[in-house]
Structures are given as structure tokens and as C-alpha cells.
Length: 50
Image: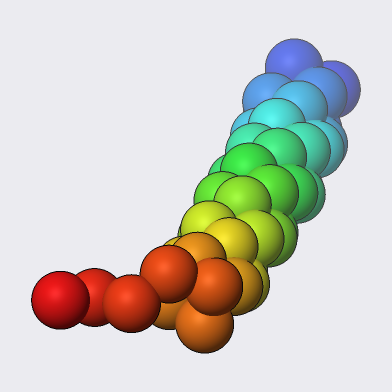
């Protein structure tokens, strides 16, 4: 019974850690995209497109 309890606790902790890591990676990706979009807007205002 204790082996099953350790298995369940380990699975839950692993799942939570995995979800947190994936969320952090997604947040990092979104923030990088926002900087790229801001840089494109600045370049578009600075130089004529034609």
C-alpha cells in the first residue's frame, strides 16, 4: 500500500512540476514575441516601406 501511495504522490508532483515548467516556457515565448512585434513597429515608423 505504501508503494502505491508513493507512486501517486510522485506522479502528482511530477505532473505539477511539468505543468509549471511548460507554463514558464510558454510565458517566456510570448514575451519574446512581444519584443519582436514592438521592434517591428519601431522599424516601420523609422524607415519608409517603399
